[in-house]
Length: 342
Ligand SMILES: Cc1ncc(COP(=O)(O)O)c(C=O)c1O
View 1 (cartoon, protein in one colour):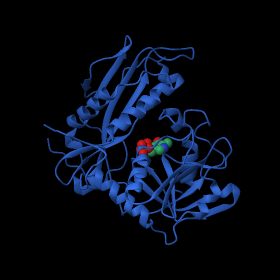
View 2 (cartoon, protein in one colour; view 1 turned 90 degrees about the vertical axis):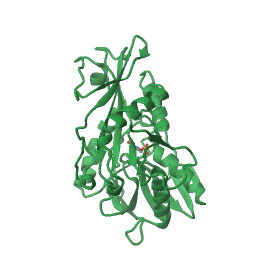
View 3 (cartoon, protein in one colour; view 1 turned 60 degrees about the vertical axis):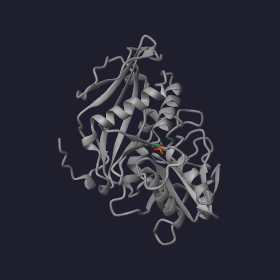
View 4 (tube, protein in one colour; view 1 turned 180 degrees about the vertical axis):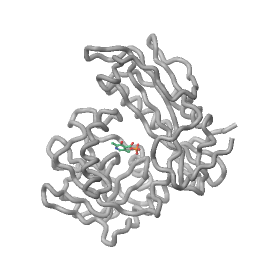
């Protein structure tokens, strides 16, 4: 069936497609993969995901490429991160093989929603795992459900690669120092909603969190990791409360390939004044370059971009990254999976 969507103007939001895929964990093991057009999940009112937040998720993308092939980016890395999230909240990890099979199946089943290359849009894939057994006391579930659905997502930069302003939110933490910040669990995102809302209300593209222990170091930038660049060096925070971004991991590898040095370490807030370039990085934007970061509570403001534009290293990193995703440059690290649509 033909799909006539205004691909370039799609937002990043839920969009109904043809199928989703599911897999249940019962009697101590993951079962067969099922496919359905039903968008609802029958769920017990006492399910552990509803009361005690036993839920984790992932986010990855499939791209229609200029050579006509469809590539999924870093599917195995997402599988492994979801396993870590599962272990972090006492859920059984979904094996990589099963994860990848589900991803390929849900993409194939909804192939008419994979946007054309020229649109700059992609197919976003959302896997999630929830605890479904009834629980009233605080305890992990016995049974689990993994669901994967997709949504065509428009290009992040409609008017081209551009910078944004961000604000440091000293009155909020999204995670505790030894808490669940390193896992992709729903509770972290619930904890970020107020800060994010306030940042947007004040005209910023997003919120920054300082490390929740000492409030001295840069932690995360909304639903993105942070990086700063100076002296040909890519610097990104080391922290126990941030999500290990797969985009960040890939950018560090590319940075070395294009001749940069890479440092993963604490980034004190005052160091922001010394960066020549900075950005947030994540699946949604790859890189969201930063113009300025304000810290209103401390009366500070850090102007990063000198001319309001993304810097040269950010441009190079972004292009190299996109070229691998689109199969334009050799995929020497085996990050992409070409999927057969027939
Ligand atoms: C809190 C948080 N940090 C960082 C990222 C970036 O991670 P990735 O590059 O794997 O998309 C995300 C998005 O997934 C996120 O939700």
